[in-house]
Image 1: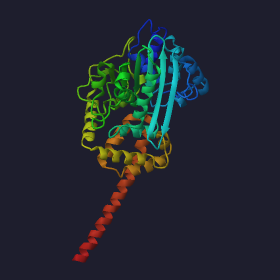
Image 2 (image 1 turned 60 degrees about the vertical axis):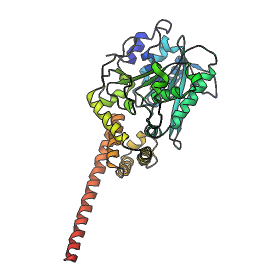
Image 3 (image 1 turned 60 degrees about the horizontal axis):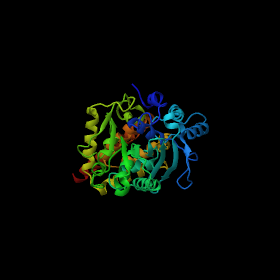
Image 4 (image 1 turned 45 degrees about the horizontal axis):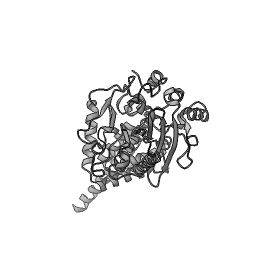
Length: 399
């Protein structure tokens, strides 16, 4: 089975003039924006641009050959990918500019974006998906009850991008993976019409939708066939707040369960993705459970639950999942705080996070959850015993 690494080896020597832009090129660029290019790619305020090949060389040198600490995602974007995309003729001469990377805990904001000028293929505006910060994950839940700060940032970023291109006739594509796909979809759909008509294609790669109560009109109505929704055969995140009867391209992946959310596992052909007919049955069952849970909760309650959960997760001052799971005592404090939330909410949340997180995070969550559950069971037993003693004493007094 072939993935985007294989694609870069197969097609990396072909320019866009020789083979036009396709779905796999979109996957490559949606993965590329997960690299932390701070200090390498100029920001909007700085102006100017840098070649993709040069940017990759600078990052590899900065990272000492191992880019893992500079990957802002659970997805397995690695050194090999960075080397392949940088050395390819297809992407190496692209120009990178307007790099943005902001995390603001107070605003529950995690936003990153990049403009990629492709020779003979126009501009691709890439929005980064959720990283490992709690602010980023809080935003994922916030789309259930409001327009988020990241969505607003994405809209303004896309508007400025189109405006700065002036009367240029080059095509503009917008895309991203996970939350990045949601940002691409939202920003393109909400752009003023005279700017939106300049957009050629919008890609949401396993990106969640936005709750119907928050965004009444489906982006599909606004964008039509320009909107490409691509999901793996086990898609949970990409099916959140999915509108009925929306066409999706379903991609094969050898990964198990939610690990298919990792865009680097998706199977590709030489000019497109390897499609399958439908989602896996157990994936459909999980999505129906989540949709049923969400539909029964009004917006105000969704907000309360989100705040309750993430306030608990940030107990002890943690800002990332790694900080929580690296210290067992911190994780136990978090789970104790979560134990005070509604049982069904807690169950759905833990299942969602465990399915969305890495195996290391899962192991830590399971170990700490068992410890807290055992402690809770003992506490409930003591309370029951005390209650029984009190009742016996009451019976004696009444007798």
